[in-house]
Amino acid sequence: MKRKDDTDRLDDMLAQHLRREPAPFNPEQWAQRFPEEARLLHLGFPRPVPNRRTQLMQIGRCIVTSRHTGLVGAAAVVLMAVAFLFPGRHGIVPESIAWADVQEAIEQVHTFRVTGTRNCFFSQSETPTYKMGLEKLFSFSHGYIDRTFTEDGRLMIELAYDLQTGTVTVLFPTRKLYFRTQAPQVLHEETQQVTFREFGESLFVSGDYRMIGPNDVQGIQAVGFEISDLHSRLKAKLGLGGRLVDLFFSFGPACARMWVNPKTCLPLQLEAEGKVNPCLVTGYREMTLREIDDRWQFEVDLDDTPFLPAIPEDYQELALPGAS
Amino acid sequence: MSMTNPEDDILVRRALQVDPESFGQLCRRYYSSLIAVADSILLDRHLAEDAAQEALAHACRQLPGLRRPERFGPWAAAICRNVAKDMLRERVRQRESARGREPQGPDVRDDAQVEVLAEALQRLPQHLREVVFLRFYDGLSYEQMGKVLGTSQESIDGRLRRAKKRIAAFLRAKGFES
Image 1 (spheres, rainbow over the protein chains, first blue to last red):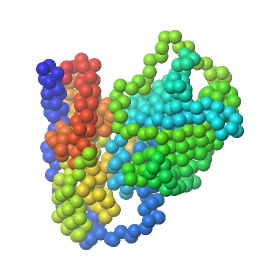
Image 2 (cartoon, rainbow over the protein chains, first blue to last red):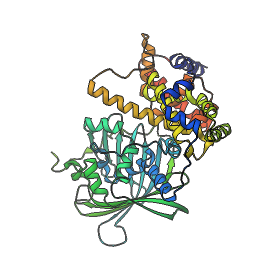
Image 3 (cartoon, chains in turn green, yellow):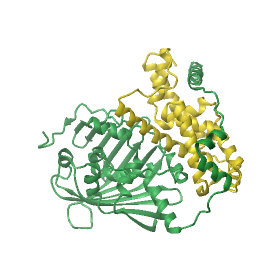
Image 4 (cartoon, each protein chain N blue to C red):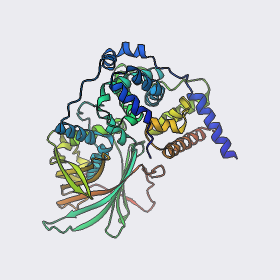
């Protein structure tokens, strides 16, 4: 009973705190403030001119500029692990609300879980040297987790970014190592404020991007967006490429392709491929990384997910050579 | 299952056929909810009213392009969120240049518990704060909230429970019993 009493009491407190007098809509006042719109209502709307090409571009723009698919952009960037966490201030295409009808479907998604494969190639062979599994958890309000698994399902690397504190934690369970750092204050504030819509826009619809398809992806005629200069975009637009990042995970030329289900406007598959320069993660060898994120779950409950994981007592701190 | 409103479909179609009163009905139906949505972002009732009115102006201009008129409510709410976020960014910029006032909480009162409650609300993620505002601001039912948010009553119930759980935990941490 106590529980119910508590709930009722909290309801009462919230009602008391938030209750407002109903605000009546005043059409005359609104018409005075927005005379052009009032005129449209009285004189009629111009007939829309259908233009298939334009519509496709508009839908595409909406898809790639939505906050959700921005997350996909972020997911691509997280190929570079900590690199995602160190963007600088970036130029943003002016926000549009014209496509809110499509955005609205996406806005409802606040968390997602995606799994897929992450393959490493250390030679020209088409057979990957290492086949790995991946899991990404994203909460718009909590942070981000990126996990890499061995082929037999053992956790190899876990990267976690806690949005509240701006803490980056990387765990290497198989080697009992960890690395923890604090995002710079400026960056931390930016990551709390920047929308992923903006982030996705700067990655996928600015500059020279290409719409591809529709192609059959997982049995769906999906619309694709492709960029071939992911690396230079990150360097130029996100201020990526700090020394610490390069020591840890030095990303080279890369391309990314995002497939979207046009019926739901939600991501269906993200493919990315890029060179990784010799760095700590590659064992100081050049590597090609090919990643496919192909299983997406939206609105998963991540409330109890440790974005700021505890470091086990027997783990040792990873020293980045030359980082000091 | 998403909530839709068949009456909205009729009102939107009539509005497009030069019937201003139909658009007025849509405005009356959603204005208060849009204020709640905007207030959950801006935490300022007066700015929220401005945002709601501006959102309706955007909705009016974009009405011919609305592909699913029965979802006018969620569509207008999405526009309103964008307008409110723009206004919030603008306010942050102005505050930074003026080094002015802190953002207002909803009706700051002397009561310490109320201040803590306001802080708890501010700390909620926006999508959870939004359902709390819609629920308690105007006393909307789950069904009415579903028509604004375009989502199922189960989803709304889940979000509301998560939000209240967090608020209660915050109050406890600050030494108050919820």
